[in-house]
Image (cartoon, rainbow, N blue to C red):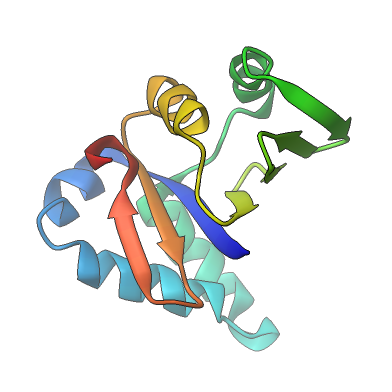
Length: 127
């Protein structure tokens, strides 16, 4: 199982990094590894490059998918575990389901996917 972390990137940041996603990935990886002493700086950097997920709106989109199980912010959809936080979405799966990709892409066109364990990254709208 792989752990994919999805971030909504601000449009102006997307325009800067859409052709240089490796640099954006490095920034997000450093934010992901921020220790508690640097947490305020990490939050500040996150707020500069990312938008938060509107959980209510996103859950409405997710309900269009075949949800097998739901527990608070955690959903099981086609063997994909999806955890919805306002700062990011975590998907645990062997491969992200196409229906989920389509749904999330309709929700927002500037989602960046990171798999920090395998150093993989890509724009959702390019899948």
